[in-house]
Figure 1: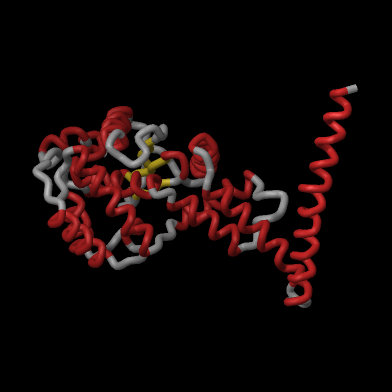
Figure 2 (figure 1 turned 135 degrees about the vertical axis):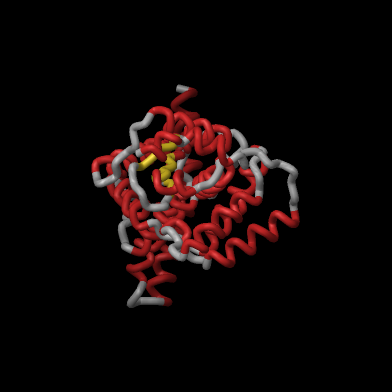
Length: 286
């Protein structure tokens, strides 16, 4: 009897002190909105839910990010992306990548580095630590430090969660976010589209350069390798896709030089050209 009486008291307290005030606030809010903006009051509901869903997407856990990254990766491999199967090249790239990851912003994320059989000079990253490097880019680099500088930049994109932020914005722009949430398949499809289109923003590219340079430096590679590789591509007269985004490549080079001058480092690992050629000889023979 005492327990029932206690429960009755708690229920009565909740009903009078919490429930009714809450209902009053909601009713007042709806009246206020409909009175102030009678023709637009209904539009507030999807806008509120869009904000909630966007927040959920941007706060995606590492586990969710990796799982979605795996699905995006599968879609890429099911398309025209063809992996380069030489075990030595893949092992070499993995070694460089994991060395960089240990000194990155997200060292506990299970990164996966894959080599794409494509002569064009390109690299990109998706969710969950998936980084892709074209064989054409590996061949173009003159030494390991230059290759590592590109990999560090892509790791920087993942460290800054740039693709997740782009996915959130694209979902909002296209009106895909609903009160029920954003379907996982839609999330994967957006990520796949963004990975293939390789969009870039001034803010994200500068941030990836900054993060990449810091990772490169902490790993002991030559800082100047990031500059020399970009300059080499500019001299070729054909800037690859992964560099031909906002901002202009010249602005990025100047920003990197300024960062190096501000925080100089004596690291010079990875500048041996002959050793690098030996490590990628399978590519040079093909």
